[in-house]
Length: 292
Image 1: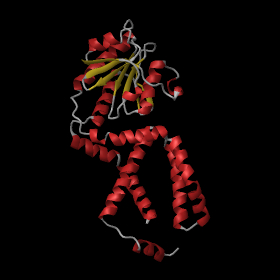
Image 2: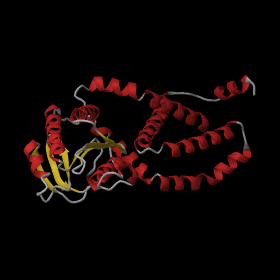
Image 3: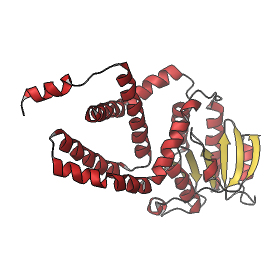
């Protein structure tokens, strides 16, 4: 293939302002998809789809008629199969797209809240009292919750200790934190599909992992049998070494989801997500070129 072919291809393409907006919109959608698949740990499946997409693109570029016809004939069925396989991921995609407008939501300072949670966790660990505390991120978790009682009470150590006291009727449920208040208590969370990750723990930890599989919330679980504290986030489960580690994780979570210094957080976000942004822009450009 000589260089004249590439020159002829680009000579026939006109590029204007509307094309820039077109590419940026597609890139934004691709970026959202990447974020969802990263959070849901679906990388192996999406990698297979990318390989198929590359093969299809090459068949068009090199005019491989048979390969192109086969891909086109199965394309309609492929979309249906993909929608079935990724129905949970697609729901997350639309939820994340819908919360973009909430990025500027005003939130309180979390220093006192973190201190209260860490102090309460130390007491739970020492006395081997089970606890389950949920910190929602930007995604709504309401549809994943069952039961519980609305409280809207300002969070404090005595209040947490009374809720999770073994003699309390709501001690087996979860506490939902919203701002600096306990929104609900005695709430039931969805159980995790990945049972192996929490095989050495009870239902409380499986519920914590379950909510992390379907939302961007951070969940703190204290084991009454082991006297340990664990956190679940983005389908991941981790048992912590001490309360100071819990404080650091909570601080990082609040800074990421509800930053006080939005400019500094934007720069940090840009550095962290540069590979995904570049991949999204490149993919959108390739799709745009193929469509011409």
